[in-house]
Image (cartoon, rainbow over all chains, first blue to last red; front, side, top):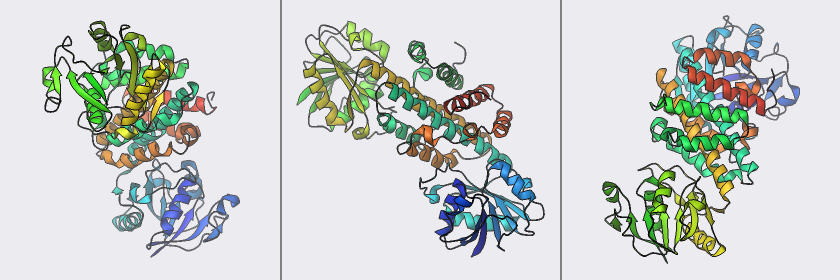
Length: 255
Length: 255
C-alpha cells in the first residue's frame, strides 16, 4: 500500500479522494488546502491541514489544483526526494519541483460537485520522469480505472484541447439548445434522447461518417431559414461558422 | 387497425417502417418510392410501387421524404379526402395538398442506416388540421413511442433548429476531437467516456450550470495556448467564437 498526501480541495481532489478510498492500494493519510471550509469534506475520515509547511510524510504527493496554483505550490513545497504528481492536462512535468521525482496523473473527465462519477471508466493519463515511477503511477491509476494511458506531454496537451471541443463546447451547444426550447415553451427534455443518441452513435461510427444535417447536405434553403430565425447575433455566427466547417470537412468548402 | 401507405425509401422511411411493423395499431399495406433498388428492403413483406399514380387505398398516407420532395409529391398526389402526413421538422402543414386532411408526424431523431433505434424513446411531434386527426396521430405515435408531443409549427421549427445545434453541430465537434486525437496518435476511444458523461450530465443538471472549461473560468492563458496549438484556421475561429459565446452567456463578455 502506498501512502498519499492530497493537496487541494476542489472537484478533482474530492473525486480522487473518494475513488482512492475505495481501493486497497492507496491510502490517503492527509489532505492539505488553504480553504478551511472546503477541508470539512475530508475531516471525518482523514487528517487535514491548512499549512503547506506541515505536510505529513508520505510516499506520494498529489497536487490537485488549478494550473496556476500548481506552480505556486511547487515553488513552496518542503518535501524532497518524493514522488510529486499533478493532475493537469496542460501543465508539463517541469512545473514540478526538481528536488523531487515528478509525475502526472491526469483524469480525463469533467467533474461536477455532487455528481458521482464511475471512476472505472475514466481514462487516466500518466507520465513520469523515470520508468520505476511510471510503474507506480500505473499501479495507482489501475486501482482506480480500467483505462490507463501512458502518454507524452504533447499528447496530453492535445487531448486537453480535444476535450475542450467535445466537452466544454458541446455543453455550450446543449445550453443554446436548452435556450431555444425554453424560448418556445418546450421542455429541454424533449432533446435528451437525441443528445444521448448522438453521443452513443460515435462509439460505433466515426463522427465524420455520422454527420447529417442541412450543412452536410448543403441545403442552403434550410440554412438561410435557420439564420433568419436566430435573433441572437453570436448564435447566428456560430451557426454560419460550424456549417462552413462541416462543408469544408466534407469537400464542399467553395459554394 | 389503421392502414398506411408509406411514401419514401430513405432512412426515416425505413426506421418508421420497422417501428410500425412492431405495433398492433398500424398496418403498412404499401411502400412507394422512385428508387427501385431501395424498394428491395420492403419487398419481402410489403407491396411496393415506383408509380405514385398507383397508390393503394389506405386510411393514412405518410410522406417520409426530404423537404423539397414533399412539395413535389404533394402537388402530384392522386388521393383525396384522406389523412396525409409528412415527417419533416421544418415544413408547414400547408405544404400538403388541401384536397386532403393534413398532419405531421415528426420523429425527433437522427437516423443512420443500419444503426438500430429504440423508437420507444424517440420523441414524436404531431400536428394536424383538426382535433379528430390529432387523436388519430396521437394513437399512431403512442403505438411507436412513449414520448408524444402535440406542438405548433413554430415550436416544431424551433425544435428543428435546436436539434441542429445539439446533434449536427455537436457531432461536428466530435469529428474535430477525433481528428486531434488521430493527429497525435491517440485513439478516439479515449474521449468516449468524457463524451458520454457530458451528454448524460445534462439530463440532471442544466447545461448552463454544468459549464466548465477555460472560457468559463476566463482562463486567458490556456485559451491563448490552445489557439497557438490549432493550425487549422477554421478550428481556431470556432475555438474563439464559442469561447466568446460562453463568456457572454456567463456575464464576462467584456474583458
